[in-house]
View 1 (spheres, rainbow, N blue to C red):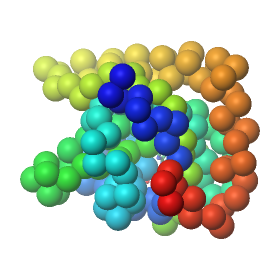
View 2 (view 1 turned 135 degrees about the vertical axis):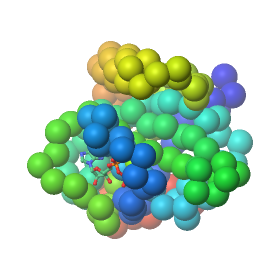
View 3 (view 1 turned 180 degrees about the vertical axis):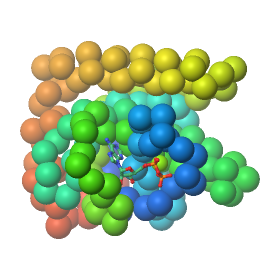
View 4 (view 1 turned 45 degrees about the vertical axis):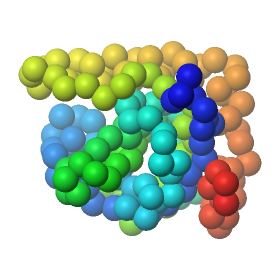
Amino acid sequence: AAAMRHLPYFCRGEVVRGFGRGSKELGIPTANFSEQVVESFPSDISTGIYYGWACVGNGEVHKMVLSIGWNPYYKNVKKSVETHIIHTFKEDFYGEILSIVIIGYIRPEKNFDSLDALISAIQDDIEEANRKLDLPEHLKLKEDNFFHMPESKLVNGH
Ligand code: ADP
Ligand code: MG
């Protein structure tokens, strides 16, 4: 319930380089938001895995899973926000504007004993996101005007 309080949450910002944790090598690249965008999130938003919709520039709206976690660059006192878009892109899109709406919470952050366990958890997350986002009430948000006004800096509360 605490995790849902801020949802749906609309957010837009530039895609920056992450920590090179090798997400892409695992087949699950995550587009990282800048520190400034992360700072604009509600400070009490729960860390963990979420699902929602995402759009790069003026592109199509795709399903996504998102992690809000602790940022190792800042000794885990700052959060990081990373979006894995459930779509195969031809090219990287660093520097582009990513628009997202976060709709639902999947699970808290976890530590895994092995890489295989981590990958299989993420595959479960993606499956759950896929299923939830097919619900009519979620499909409505895919059509939200937010995704069609890229000039606006609209973020919840601004
Ligand atoms: P970094 O540590 O720089 O974030 P990643 O391995 O997490 O590196 O890869 C993220 C980058 O991959 C994104 O910034 C984006 O440019 C690119 N990318 C390609 N396909 C996707 C996708 N489906 N979802 C998210 N990012 C993607
Ligand atoms: Mg990343």
